[in-house]
Image 1 (cartoon, helix red, strand yellow):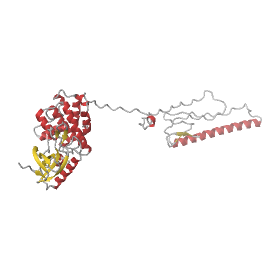
Image 2 (spheres, rainbow, N blue to C red):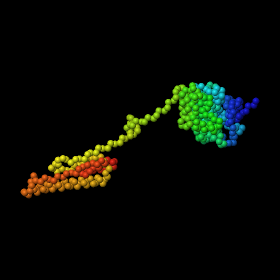
Image 3 (cartoon, helix red, strand yellow):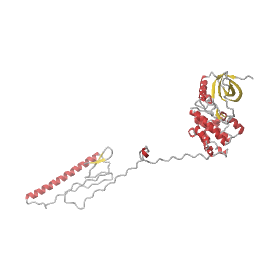
Length: 421
């Protein structure tokens, strides 16, 4: 039997698998003398745009050097078909494991989930999104090491910004398609996490989280329906395992954990415990003085409303008026009122008039006394009493305005008054 030699280098051997997009062969690299896997893709090398996309994705996958990622060695075109040369994984795929065993125990599934998430996290750090995570692309090596295959191929056969082909058909398997991809949005790292969640669910329950008779109905389930809690299928599943898995299947991409978080969670023993605790409710920060503790900047305290200054009662007139001349009583200084500049001028004018009247009365009294003492027949010092000048009553209104006879407040720029001299 004559073995086919691809690109004058790779001699094909046993057929490993065939799908709608191509076929995978075990082959021998005649140049380096090693066993490889050669995937022949259906296509036409005359399509320059397809060749460019394929070359870009092959180069991207070749940069991913990780134990959980199938290595890419070469790519090219031969006999009108594209080919991709990859690391040969000698072991079954998870699709073959499901067909043979039905379900896997939670501990085995946790190891698979940790390894797959670790490989996806390495790809995501390089800006690479797998876009086609499914049991057929997750393979187990002879020692049980999981390998993720077909990196970049899904992008080659899929549009960069949609999950639909030109004729409106879903590319790949819709069983593991994230809701955002079903809505025609760009696939991102969270889309890979969702697809891995569907695979993990199927490994535990023996069936995917959603199933329908038609791809269109299945897409609606991905977008709108909630999955049946996996513990209803597996009573031995720890609650913490179920909690993390349901987070991976969240409808909104931002609500799913990252691939790195999934790898850390299933790589340890946390999945064996109870349900993951809910995030605590945020606690309001205490009000502290500006500058915080130790001089660090802190929140500005909420100011309390200032108490209104007390209003002094009006000064009552004395019960017994003294016989001596008295100056007008100054008004108590009250809180700044709403009076404008016009009120201030009136108060100052009134003060000048009262002061003038007092001065006139004093002068008249002195003149009368002098005239009486010098005239010989008038009244002496014990003559008529000097007319008293009684100051006007001072009162403060509830609004803070000063009544007659008081000194006003002069309102400054900052809203505070200064007493007139």
